[in-house]
Image 1 (cartoon, helix red, strand yellow):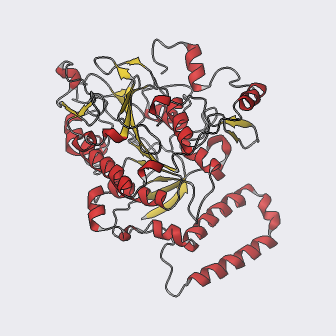
Image 2 (cartoon, one colour):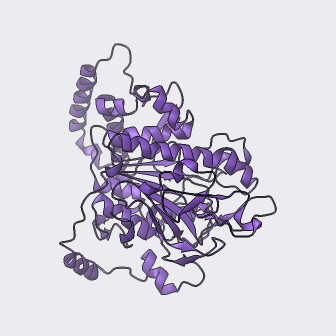
Image 3 (tube, one colour):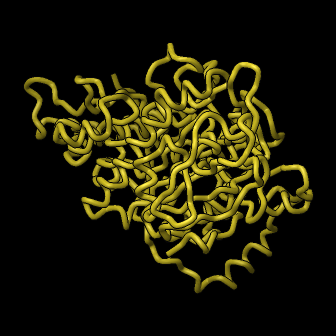
Length: 466
């Protein structure tokens, strides 16, 4: 089954209020308009080259545990380091968790950030910060709803505004599910276009590409309906709409027309239908990704960027809801069982397969792959043999699309509890993504009231850029 829906997806101790006002751009007044225009003029000659034609964001919602992935602490006490050891990688001096042997062989293509900081321990608000680059107000508010003042557009929404759609496909897609907590809270703030308006919302596709019956809606024409018939019907509909111009002033009609056009584009656009046809992939390739919802979703993401989609965000899709913690990364209980049994092995297989697949197709150099999450996990285990939420320091990894491989940026203390150096706020991570896509942080977008705003208030992490 497949549905098209609207996208409805540190303040650490020791940091000064002034510093966080700078990082999040939430100081009184932020950038004034005169200051913003002056800033743009002084940087008018700055036009970063486009290294990343497209971006794939693998968002491991629930929290990627830094201790067992990219920041193991083999010399820490057992209650900190956990049950698993560390292994060497292709990057001298970098160790990763022993459950990631395939990723360990690819770190020469990757940059690991070990000092991400949100200072927020709630899924929806820490997630908002990782999706938008702006701290949620207030912090640590679980099940937060979208809306003012927390309506900064997501990375996907901004890409929708910056880049046009192509061949019937939108420029930004999120799949295979919406961002929501395990209790079904819906949606997370920061998953849509926010103050820019609904027309720039990323496409949210709720789907299961591992289903043998999977297809794009409308991808298979009804019996007796040819491509010529589709074009004739679209022409007739356009003529009707021309006669009903007065209806266009109605906002709800405009909203309807946008989704109607999206549906028509998928039916009429041959490139769009082809991108969703996973049967064109060999059994070997599909097996490499894994014949499950998450693995086939990442394969679909590769096909979509190959077809010209600028950004695809793949939400972690739990393999089995009956498993502890709903089969996801929010491992409040049975942490070791969960990460060894299904979480990290699947991530290791899918992420490594994606990088190698892109490389084999000559696409890795122009496709930025971001392996991210909303926060990490606590240094100490709780009474249920689980690790809880931890936004004070955690790790992410970037690869391809202009990223300098074999880099480790930032570090944490001996327990992976606090950053030691080069703390990275989400706005800097996102500014780096925009830079690699060819946009400076002071690139302007407009809200629905036509007010100009910069796409980011972060700074590029130059050490990561090749």
